[in-house]
Image (tube, rainbow, N blue to C red; front, side, top):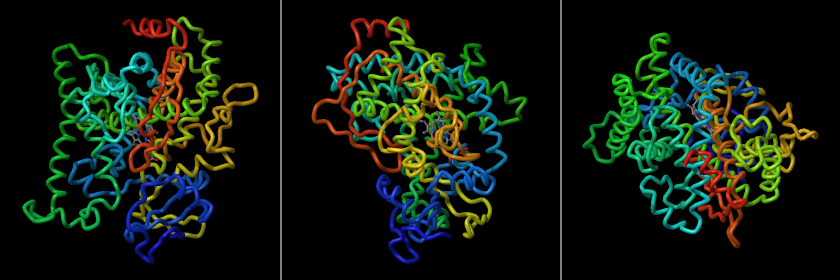
Length: 493
Ligand code: HEM
């Protein structure tokens, strides 16, 4: 394995560091394409550049497209068959085929009207809330919050909007509020996922035999936690699914992904579990990530008012002020489209990706990369690579545009954002995600002027979960008299 930043011989490092911004960029200069990072002696291969990611994670995806087996997450909490977690290659292939069937290039646009409606509703809530920020905060149940340190826009309108989009898209269910019991259970599960996946956090991941101890044995709290989380994850994927099945039997089910998959089941010969896991994965993969990206968009607009003004000028000239833009307008709005690409590049939501795992030995640049080694993609460093993205720390949508103002065809590296990962594990929800971000961004930009209250600094949440601004405080006002009414009328309220 190649060398890397390992402080203690053989052991390497004692923990996985939370902060990635400074070190992960520095690693590229010190170690180049790939390096080995050790945590408590366990080697992790880190892929630092886009070129190495293309070669290893994309071209050799058959060798590098596994997932690390983690006893706590996969066995005790019962997530081994979840699409993001599974190492069963034929099950994974089936999931990917079904994701493509319901959320691929031919089908993803079916969700556009729903995405537009809910993100406009979020824009309306943001516009109507500023003077009563505290009230607004109280309206949500704080136990639904992922991170108690974050306020207002963390519990925000966008998170509610994305939850509403996913539940209606996947189950045909209109959730009434962000504290709906099913949404709360799902959010709790996401919050827990970050703790059960964090490498080195559970002794049972290091000594798997401990899982056979009886649960009265001292020090085996992980067994009790595993049992509780397992039951809740089961409920999270089963309750809404059973509701759809009941509605199907009564003839009242709304068109949704679950109904489509149940009907497809006969042809695909997939069991009920596959359908349940797909629904589960759309919320678990797509809710917090899309909401985080929209919060990053807000932060970018506060820090770069000239970008905000340019996007608004594009909207004024192409769309006008009578009706807000739709997702069909995306092609006519290259600057706003470029802005979404830049949100995903500037603060990639999962800056160190989701770890892959070597399924076979591979030789790369003279190193033997052994089967079973976890692989982390240093997406943060790739999106900071000055060769691909000059002035990489700056938020510049123009970098995605050609001189004539149209979107560039030869974007650095590849057409799907680096933020969505690599190879056979690349995010299957990227079209849904990009549409969520675009719809949310243009609903806000069309109707609202966002500005940073004086003295407010933007800080970022760094850690194992999605990147997002911490404690975002925003001043908002409607762009013209009547913008709020136009927005409200556009969603029929
Ligand atoms: C801004 C939003 C999103 C970002 C930044 C994002 C990013 C990612 C990344 C980095 C991965 C890991 C890829 C890899 O292992 O190389 C991933 C996987 C995944 N994402 Fe997303 N995602 C987003 C939204 C969504 C949405 C809307 C869905 C809904 C379907 C989704 C579902 C999944 C699933 C199921 C996987 C596991 C794929 C597999 O292991 O085969 N994600 N995503």
